[in-house]
Length: 110
Image 1: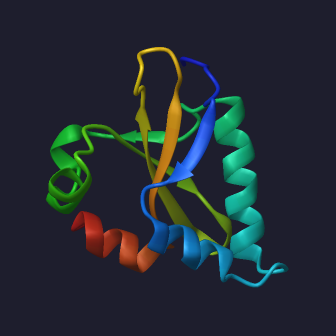
Image 2 (image 1 turned 135 degrees about the horizontal axis):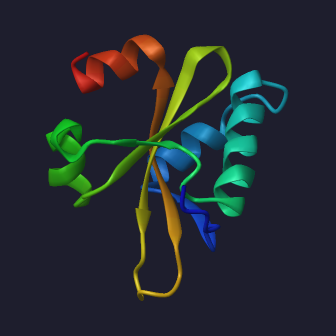
């Protein structure tokens, strides 16, 4: 497994970041998301890669995502992120979405 930390972890858009910021500080989900950010900074490749053929078209059309990874969160929630290298040097882990397992299955048509 390739190990390389993300130089930065960002949200794909302001709405997602605001949703995260609005979570209660003691929420298990917020704690789990914070831990995920720490882990992504240590190793951007710590999640499981989602095959290209399974990347939802909405991510490709809306954000231009060409790679996708998922990371397990507390209480069967899932974090979906992409790895980008805007200048071919820095690695960005870009949080695309997080949702419960049911919505994850719906999004990926499992």
